[in-house]
Length: 444
Image (cartoon, rainbow, N blue to C red; front, side, top):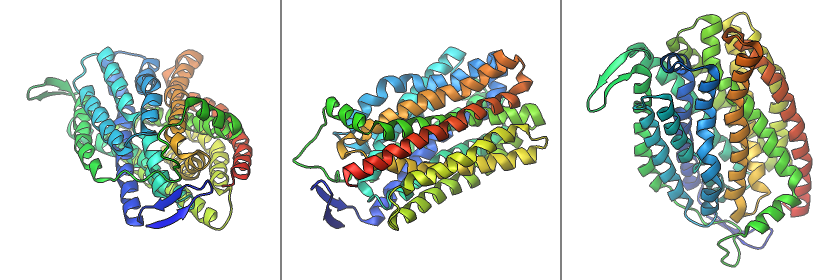
């Protein structure tokens, strides 16, 4: 361990690197499972829609709104708890809850019961992000934090890819629309078997998470165990440009990511007549390679630049990815060959992942220790309401009510991305200005 003092006079005792990277790896694995459980539904949109006899809009609500509903209610209270209690235990409990809820999706018999199970998945996953961000900020100094955040965020793409690959592989053995007789459960559809199988690994990981140690809170002074809400809001008002810009910039980027991620499988099936197995194999492989490499590359580059004295490197790196995403996100649905579409989808995943390490490190960097989980919960509430719920719904509404034609899905994707991607750049520019001011006045 290294023992120093931070700018505010509080103790800075960083854990050993071996322990820190083990924690980052375990949290990345948890994030991977979270996104496996979340993304599996996207691959199964078509067979589920046919079985449930619902519209694209209804499926978008099942993918997005159901997931965010309960998070709105529990995210902030759980984060406040994480700011004053053991964050590792909160994460272990969250993994258990969402994994059990994912398995319950496999026994749901109606749209309403499936919607309720998805609400429970969202409630469980709401406990992961804020606590994980806060723990990582106490395991890694600011020069190494972007790389650690990149490792954690690669779970988004590793999880999404695993859901597609496993779902695609399973669909070749058990067709999604087939009937399967299971002991004790009875007859279920093939797509329900996917959810049942995906819920089991998380139940094991929730116990393994106890191997991660709860780190000492860096910079804590005077035995402080809680920050009043008025102090939290006062701090956020002081640096409102940074929090507003980073929050809304990433929310709009994630809106594009969730919108495309939810509908790319259906897009590939409708426009190019690819099968579920083909989509799972092709799209899953691309997501794994490009998304994971993007998150690692962005985090490492931001860390290296930070170590060389570029104090605003975290958001400069993110800005590069935001700008490059604008043409890519609008162009891929318009390609006439599925291979060209997949190539641009791969580039889109790389660029989106490239942004996370530095952006999330910047958010932690300007936030005092005992406020980090609460601020992270506010950030996740924003990105989930706008991104996770709004993205899939926006494309569905444009498809169902603007074009009034399911085959117009490619144009709906392009239209939504053409609006949201440039706005994300504008918002992050505001955040960059506020971030620079926060670094100056806070003496970071």
